[in-house]
Image 1 (cartoon, helix red, strand yellow):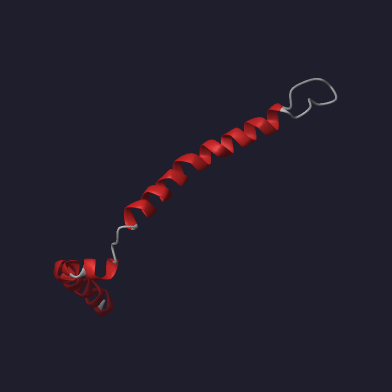
Image 2: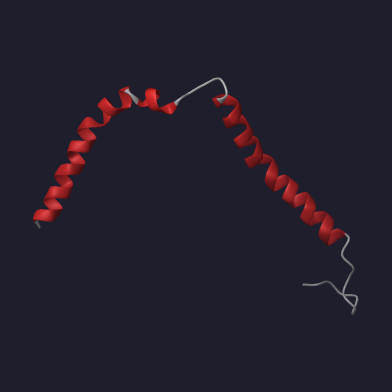
Length: 74
């Protein structure tokens, strides 16, 4: 029981001091002129990779020969 109270007290103290740590966050973030470009390229990859994968899979299955019985593969 003492251990739980100690953990709760520690968590509350960390929440109280959180704004003090936020003041110095830009000192450690190292935001430069390249940061927006890095974010843009990351988001661009997230958007384009599924589209490229969908096109590759569509092309692969569109050029695949049908089964020997002539039916669908379902």
